[in-house]
Length: 181
Image 1 (tube, rainbow, N blue to C red):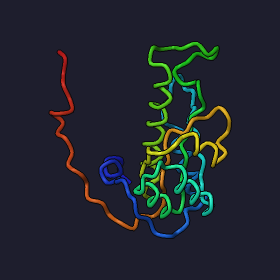
Image 2: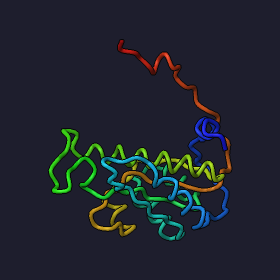
Image 3: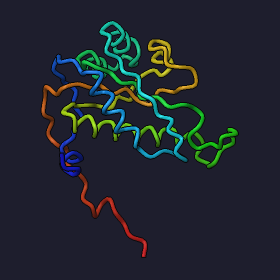
């Protein structure tokens, strides 16, 4: 797939077919996402694939702060991927001292880059995704047994699209770009 086609055609999808997502395809997607840049090449982003129906149901019904749209999306997705970060590492020196005044902001920045790369790689593999951010992190960590020392940055619903969302209006380049000469 052409890069610009991949970027321009990828959409947030909230309705999925029941078809399972194979672990081989998820591994291929994570392999691509592993090339996302990170603070001092710290590579702190991790992925936890959840395909067990009972665990998906528990995450959807108990961990999204009663936000029904996320519950419905998660229940309908064949796979959920918890995007986590090893913390605190990004934005810090190896001795634990901060490298920047941004503090843990870089964890989110790195996870965002990796998540976008994951979503584009998934689209390239014929899968659809949506990034979900409304959840109770402590409940997700407890429910999914996220390894100690990791924070949950996002939940991705992943599967084969059962809808074709229309592209929302985009801002013009002139609105987005300014030059300081």
